[in-house]
Amino acid sequence: MDFFGKIKMVFQDKGLRGRLLFILGALLISRLLAAIPIPGIDTSRLNSFFAGNDVLNFLNVFSGGGLSKLSIVMLGVGPFVTSSIIMQLLTMMSSKVKEMYQEEGEIGRRKFTQISRLLTVPIALAQGFGFLILLEKSGVIPTLSGIDMIINILIITAGSILLMWIGELMTEFGIGNGTSLLIFAGIVSRIPTAISQMSASFDISQIPMYLLVVVISLIVIYGIVFISEAERPIPVTYAKRITGSKTSGGVSTYIPLRLNQAGVIPIIFAMSILLFPQMIFKYIIQIATNPTLKTVASSLNIFFANAWVNGSLYFILVVLFTYFYTAVTFDPEQMSKNLQQSGAFIPGVRPGTSTSEYVANILTRITLVGALFLGVIAVLPIAIQSITGISSIAVGGTALLIVVSVIIDLIKKVQAQITMREY
Image 1 (tube, helix red, strand yellow):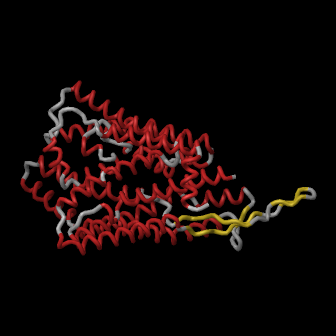
Image 2 (tube, rainbow, N blue to C red; image 1 turned 120 degrees about the vertical axis):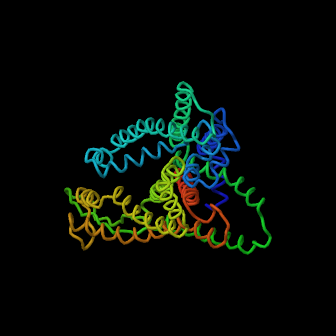
Image 3 (tube, one colour; image 1 turned 60 degrees about the vertical axis):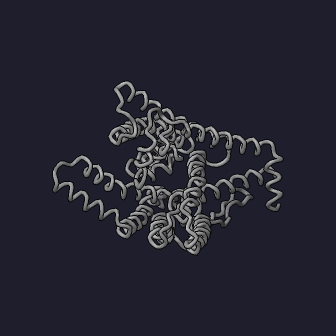
């Protein structure tokens, strides 16, 4: 079936059309919630507060722009994403959590998800309190009394939990991952604002640079699609089994290992760690009364804010975290155990330890390619801005990687639904 035939089938099929309409409705509700601000905001101070603040601008990506507007869903799905990452890390540190996630099947994964939901609540309470205190100190919102502080924290937390619930409904009744779609919608919703800002500062003498940015953007998008879809197949053969007069097994297949096993998580980890010292130094500069302490903090802040230093550290951290997160989420020993239990083996490799070592060596090599690619994507906006002076989210970074990855996943899910209905 050609492309237009598939589009026609999407709109003709009642079930598929209903799922897509549900997603659109849920995204519309999430964007309406993001437009409802908390009371008592000083808009001018809010804009100056966000100007040049890399930490808040980074967090604003995951709140769908709600943080920059101080909406009731200003935290977005950030607390749920944080709790999910914490639970993934616990699988490496706790054998019970690892067993629940990897060996207990669907029931274990449901328990894992439920714990992630419960962990979201204290994380949202802590983040909401921290943001409100920061906004008070900066004069963006008036000083809140004890009751007002509690009410605002509860509103912000409830908004984050509501978005988490909407995301899970989208996953269940729509197509694709609801949380990823909410982040995707938040990023895309900022595009008109970015275009208007670029048009306001348009300089006709910079047209060659603008064209260069467009060309690089297309190359980056192609690279993201290529790396996201690239995989290293490991051949697997199932042993023959003879039961009476029947013979089963003997089938050859393969296990695909993706070049980018970690997705966008290493960039999030690296950016969070890289921005944390800068946030601390800026806070010390504001409150320090000791001249020596203020001078040291100011010097360190300038050092970390340097584009080349920042970019180099960013690249190194992304590569390291790619290996770390791949090790957390993919266990060669467990894979070897599963193959052995199912009567499968890799041709030319002994079952057990030899198989896990073979898979681990392949994973180490292909992860290097994925890690270097993620590192380049992460630092590309810094490099482009340093060379051309044009600041754009369209030439790399977390936002573009999320957008392209979500679109690829959504297209695959829609094609799977269409294929199922054809049969």
